[in-house]
Image (cartoon, rainbow, N blue to C red; front, side, top):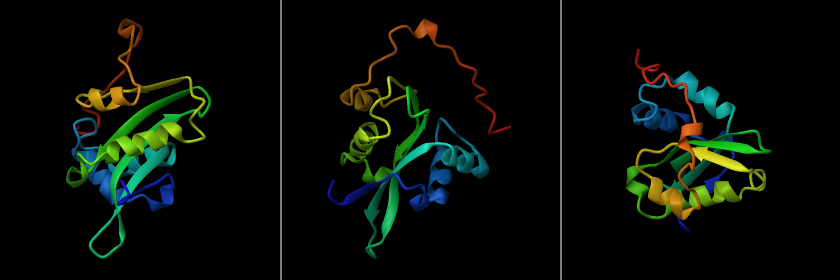
Length: 145
């Protein structure tokens, strides 16, 4: 992964790229830009950068963590752009997030994913042992109404 750089600096984030990806994703389809900006402002974020043809950093991945920095974190909005998938970029970004000094003492991490269970399993994630204890309040069409 030497061609990639991970950053936790929100000032480096490409909000246009993040919004474009999320607004087309299955989990945040149609999300308004101001909601993306607010979610980033109130979260711990990681990004992956690669050098473009001109040698400039371009963002190619993103992850957002909602946390109290003491006991709990919810991992959300994880993506790697298609051209950079299959190179270990997502794994490296998530390893860096899990190893970040501000997050290493968390007792519980949670996420929802439709199709990336094998990736997260390699990072130590397991299915919820008692899903009947979990509940949600989910307005799936909120952004598309």
